Image (tube, rainbow, N blue to C red; front, side, top):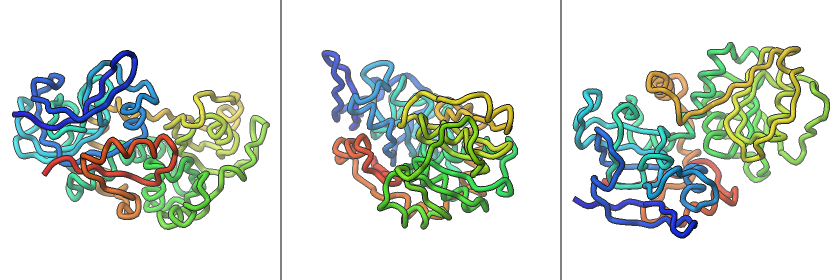
Length: 329
């Protein structure tokens, strides 16, 4: 059996990504074979496929950090033939062949049963972005975050993680303040549940170690100066979930927010999350953290053949919400 896959190579020190016909034996080892129905596009996928970022640690690999589909064969007792399942992260498209293929061969440890009420399309409407947003909220609440502590500010708000985080937080009763550089997206963010929208160019980031406390907590997708500003402005015992670094990897702060306000900086690594925690968080995504506005957040659904032309808009910062990729039938 051969099948279609979007494979990433390094040839003469240049990244070359293309469609190829593969067999299962061309894929990395695994004990579960999944017929892939849907995948998605994350910023990380665009970096990997174009070579704009160093994502893959070995070549060649099938791209795509997420997938949802049906188990075709399994040597793992946790996975049965016919089960509807999903996989996000877990080293896909980094050290293991990913979801941009009609079939995937995976380790059973990574494979999560499809939560009731989701299905393959909704699972990929969420994907790594939804799982990351939910993991951030789960960890913040485990660390004492509640709506009573004040508004949660979400940076990089129009991206996948930001959009879904706003939806989830507002459904949990939090007041949500969105931060974006896109003035044209204010109505979109309010429709997801943001009570207020701050335009990035209008923010006074301050210079002191502590500025006036404005927020009960934060989910930050940007890093750099934005994250520094959040450490200065989150109130006592608030949590900052640190997810991204599109605005820079450096953090210029002091110990003052942490020892005088008790602010907690929580690193969110969704790709390396252990299975037990994945099961807990995906169950929450299907229940108390279930987004109410996925129809607004999924801004495009594309077929497999259109995948290569979709990446550049991610690198240009021109994408709002989520893109779902239809792989198989």
